[in-house]
Length: 182
Image 1 (cartoon, rainbow, N blue to C red):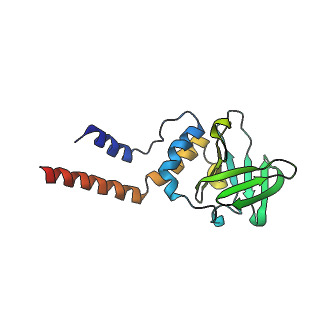
Image 2: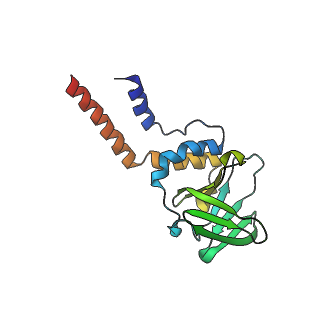
Image 3: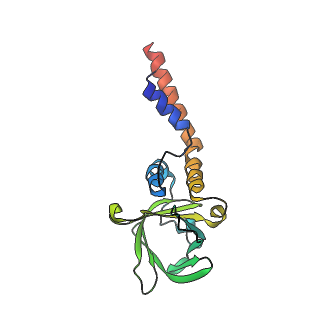
């Protein structure tokens, strides 16, 4: 059997995060692999009214920053218990939010489920300090660091039963081809 095929099959069972230097690089590699498991921003029950903790890989980011997108457009940000309110709205699979008297931001959905809410800043990624806005459900976020959270998200879908069914079908096809050619 071709070594490349064997390597690809082995990679399918490997649930370690792909190598990367930063949170943005990890997400650039992970999101395309799990995106099909994401919900849509129109499905507000997945993010509205929930308490989300922001994750960053910056060494100087030590605050507990919670974000709440309440119904009817109210946005609350709490940094170590001090809060301010603003507004949010959904616009064609984009989320716009900010505070009165300051500039808001526009994000596109990168990934959403009941535990992870990852937005990608709209605009030129080369001009941005960080491309992703990573939010993790509060009950999960309080137990893990950012890299563990990404690993948890990756493993949640990388190890799903549909993934194994797909791999099993591929293996069976390869075996059938080799048997037919013998």
